[in-house]
Length: 331
Image 1: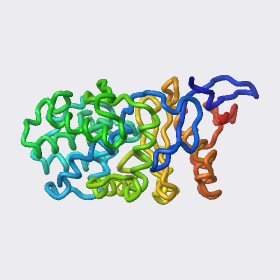
Image 2: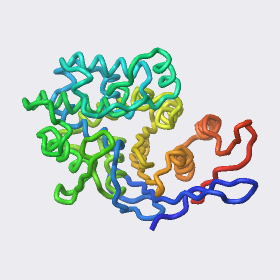
Image 3: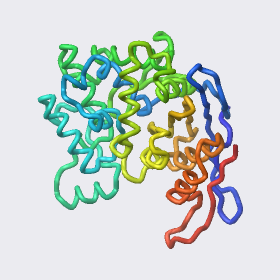
């Protein structure tokens, strides 16, 4: 059963409660810590993206299309639709000989408010390239071309590219294929339903691929992890916790957001993976939860914790900027 993780207070009284579950796992699959149900089954959402890219990277996609480490970061991103993100997606589509109309992710406004306002002001249309999942979709289209199958319909579960991705997600998370369920994600591709324990295990393996029992996939896992470490703004967006936690820790900690408040972290110097789910799906609870769990596990230096608190203070303000409440971890 989910447990209370965060209290939001006003005038010393609890006003909102966020419940959830988290688990911390090492490379060997040992549970280091947990609150709630360590084996809670849940949809992995966009936190699965690093592992969805495994077959493309493993089978030589980076060399075939001369894809840089920065471009690899956008392939596993949930980007904010900022100008550099859009430019990277357009560049990838050009390399593939495709266009935005080939993307099956649907149209979505940029997550970044400034980018959205600038787009509206310019009069330019919002298109599929602004969708936070356009990088993943570009990667799946590239994989389809490599497999020699048609690109159209790549988002469907029965497509050969999706079947291959399914096998690799099962392998990365160590969930038997007959136990790995799917649904359909917000961007239209299959989304995976599995225990948060296995999500955490996959990120533990990703944290230090040399110790993660990847076999022939070690090099591919390392390239994906390093792209996330080296280009956190590309992998997420300006002012987001995914970006800032990696930048502040110099890539020692890599975070990846999933929709509806699923979140995963790889702790590279500790060989650990962390996965949590906020029960009510509140995005607002994700950032304070990331910081709270890292503090709880003593995974931040004093300076790193101070910098994160400065960027994301655990307080609530009204529209005038007055402090009117707090955000408090309850574990």
